[in-house]
Length: 108
Image (cartoon, rainbow, N blue to C red; front, side, top):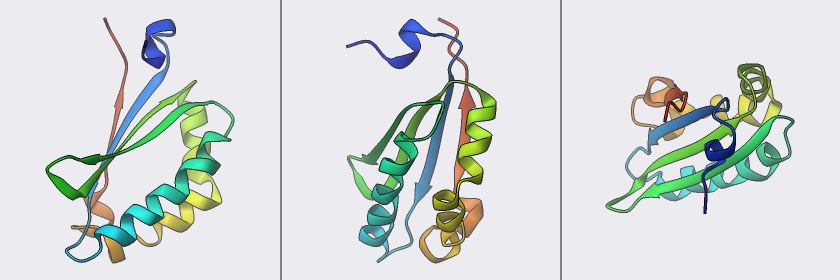
């Protein structure tokens, strides 16, 4: 099965990484799972895939693709994401600084 960028190399790919505070793994996972459906309905979203590390059930990643940087900016301002961002200190190692977001452009 091809990846989203196979057909459109201009998509903006995003990898978001975070690690739960000890004892908060299940709560963080639940919060992250609740972000998926509303994000998939957003304009410009191609995919929004939640992953957990095989060797660490407290480490999570989102693999996302957006039609443009503007669509990603709109996503970041949506109420469900803003509400979640307000909880980062409660759930993540490093609080809000524990969320790493990397934007990528496929080159080959």
